[in-house]
Image (cartoon, rainbow, N blue to C red; front, side, top):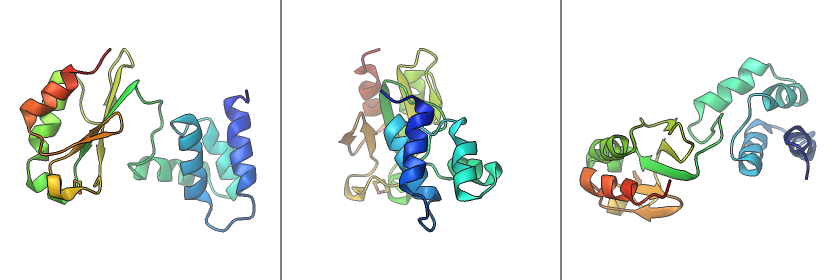
Amino acid sequence: MQDQAGRVAAIVERFRGVEGAALPILHAVQEALGYVPAESVPMIAAALNRSRAEIHGIVTFYHDFRDKPAGRHLVRVCRAEACKSMGSDQVAQGFEQALGIRLGETSPDGAVTLEPVYCLGLCATAPNAMVDGKLSGRLDGTKAAHLAAGLQP
Ligand code: FES
């Protein structure tokens, strides 16, 4: 099995000479490793002839990218307009209170990552969340807390 740096190097190589490769490379790294490690930024920057600050800026600007590994469970609360207007604040609070972490955090034991997402593509059932890849719609704070309670540590 390739180490992390080797896997990033292979991804960078795959996109060598491709115009506008920053986002595709970062997506590929996140898909391969589950996050974009800070140590990979210099290698990606060098390959693209961009500064480290630019690449770091992309990673932190886009909500899709994570700069730390996710927890064993991933809870994504939709914060886009349709869900917001239907009460996603209460859903987020329900998860936050039940899990003891805020949106954007991972529990200290690494069990759960709670993160915002901007449209899950099923606005008709707003407000929505996705728990370990499974979509739940028409949520409220109580249902969110219930979903959180069902997660195994
Ligand atoms: S806005 Fe939440 S699923 Fe589209």
